[in-house]
Image 1 (cartoon, rainbow over the protein chains, first blue to last red):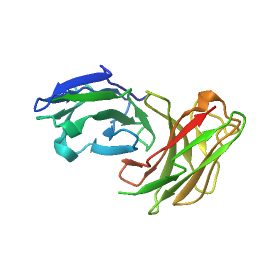
Image 2 (cartoon, helix red, strand yellow):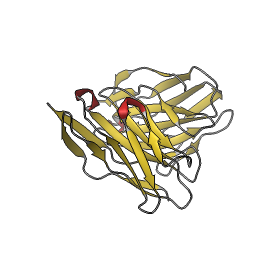
Image 3 (cartoon, rainbow over the protein chains, first blue to last red):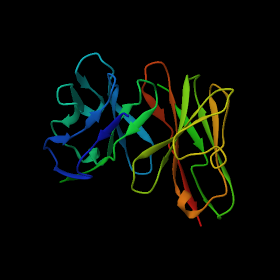
Image 4 (cartoon, chains in turn purple, cyan):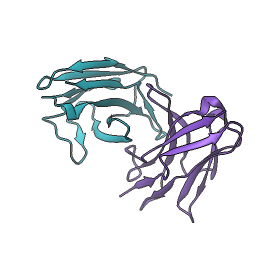
Length: 113
Length: 113
């Protein structure tokens, strides 16, 4: 069954430093992969997606992710953290190539001034 | 993209009662889903809401507890029946088109006392 693994539930990063959130997936079919962000008391907002086109995907708010099939990874990065990046981030994989999504446990990002 | 609204945004209910959550999408979509997010946890898919037919439930979720309706392509309801404190969660509706990404509503925050 398709699944994603996100390690390190809480991630602290200094303002201006690199943000790196790791996501590894398990899928028996070519996966569709997504990163979502959830701000406090809000729903989820799509940051970016991989759907078998370019392996380096650029999203909103300066985030990008690279699909690496050999490593079964889809890590999320942002070169310079901003205070407004403090939120929870979820990696998700489509289940069996359809629209159903399986989510990772999430990373709570704290930005330190 | 699609804009999704949910009603109510939050509610406090007594155990043994039922609550119906409404989800409205601003455009016709192929698929709609219902998720549960327990406190401090990730999202778990409850079911796929099928237009004009019975919903498709994930393992661990049953129709008697979570009846779902989808009378048309832009509207769905989820009922949480015979509630207990363990049902206290955020319930999120999402919608997907042909490009696989899902768009989420703001969620309904349910507290059962």
